[in-house]
Amino acid sequence: MISKDIVNIAVNAGYTVADSGMIIKVHLDHIAKENLEKILSYENSKKLLSDIKKKSPKLVEDVFNEFKFIEIKYVLQKILSEKISLVNIEVILELILYYSLKTRDIEEIAINIISRFKYSTK
Image 1 (tube, helix red, strand yellow):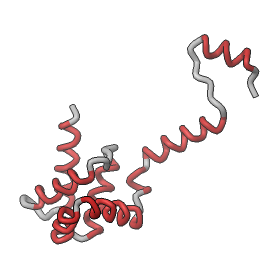
Image 2 (cartoon, rainbow, N blue to C red; image 1 turned 180 degrees about the horizontal axis):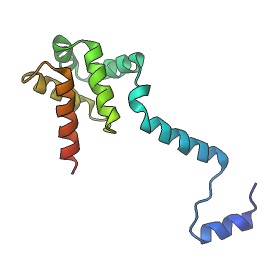
Image 3 (cartoon, helix red, strand yellow; image 1 turned 135 degrees about the vertical axis):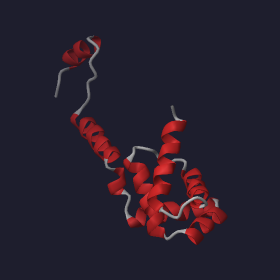
Image 4 (cartoon, helix red, strand yellow; image 1 turned 180 degrees about the vertical axis):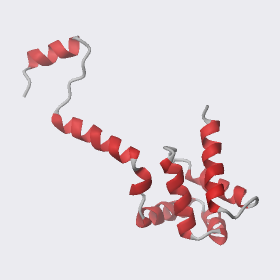
């Protein structure tokens, strides 16, 4: 345990003082964010799409009419590998459908979606 005097000196000098639990949490958060595509399991993907289906049943139905679940999971993992959030999952699903009009190549679809997100944020 660091004394309060030392903590005050460090804080006044501009340092951040954190306990060991916080350091471990930050480290684990960083590792998780860097490896999200590996963490997105089959079951997690199913749950994510099931949750979206409750809000947008027709969208999910249309996507599954065009592609197998494993193909959708692949696209999501590719997106995560590029450090793009899935917070806009409905937009991602719409883009899968949009690009499917041009190609059936799931790799090309993933690349197009990644490009779209990367260039739209700059």
